[in-house]
Length: 234
Image 1 (cartoon, rainbow, N blue to C red):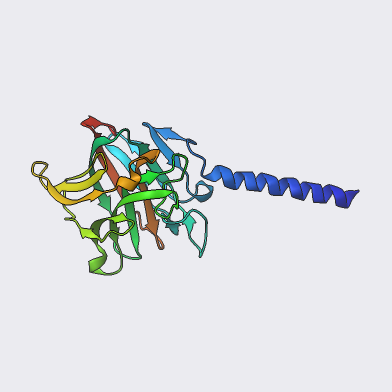
Image 2: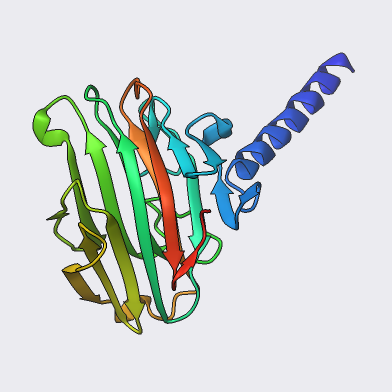
């Protein structure tokens, strides 16, 4: 009798644990200013805070924005996302970063297009299109960089670290990125014909990150995000 009771208890615990794993990445667990919060693994990897001067994102050691399951000592980290509507929009982002040199660390953000219930990670198989910006630093001076690329198939485009505004646009099947150093003239980076993504049910602006080891207090401040001219962060 006691043995049967223990086996039943273990089975129930397994079901409960499996349910927790499912719940770890459930959409809409939290909401801040209309953002969807996709928690890090066990809510331990990555953190965010809304302040009067913008949205702060903090890295945690061994979080990885390209994973949806833990492996090799890394775990999926916090992702914040905001849904974009329609076939024509413009999103202007202003952000600054504190990224001390040391082990590799980065902040990833941009546009994710795919399934409407999918976690918008870089490695998500549900994504049809990703326009990915990465602000990173690492052990070498050359690691201190800002780049943008699109997946699948895109090459990396270097961006000025001191840019003021990064602009993402959609016009029908076309997605484009441009930037401004002084908030006046915008320099085009690329314009992409992404007809395969045109009918996907969800398009999001997302924020994530990676840290190979101690992030040493690294954080990003997203101080302005204007979607079609409307400020969403202050």
